[in-house]
Amino acid sequence: MKKFTIALTTAAALLFAPAVYAKDKLSGEEKLAKILEGREAGRPVDCLPHSANSDIRVIDKTAIVYGRGNTVWVNRPTNAKNLDDDNIMVRSSHTARICNLDTIRLLDQTSKMSAGFVGLNEFVPYRRVALTN
Image 1 (spheres, helix red, strand yellow):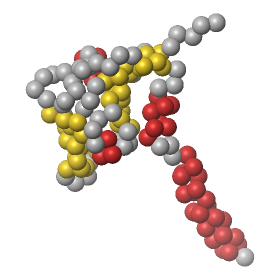
Image 2 (cartoon, one colour):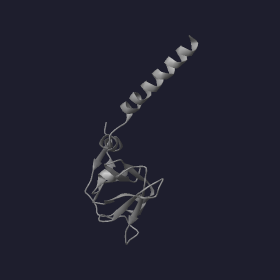
Image 3 (cartoon, one colour):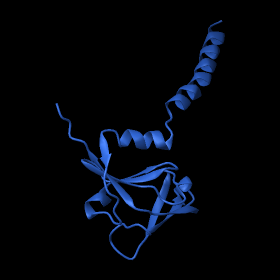
Image 4 (cartoon, one colour):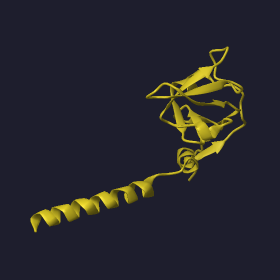
């Protein structure tokens, strides 16, 4: 009877775990909305300041977010469907700055084979909105 109870409990846990994981998984747009909570969009820019290059987050199939703190810049590149936070990004540019029209090759982390590319568009700055009482 004890083995049956252990087997039943294990089976229930295995069946329940994927449901919990699926429930918690956010879409790319939902993840981006969470990052942008409390922020207001500014005028798009063609190139980023050097300070924004220190922190880059990929939002699967949605956008690339640069920077942290009071201002983050969001780029919704062409071929965004190729974006995967597990891929390695290799930027092709003729300048040290990150600018629109730069292209980024995506490489699979394991095989190092091509996983596609994206072309950068304008960067939209999002700044924290000051709370007023």
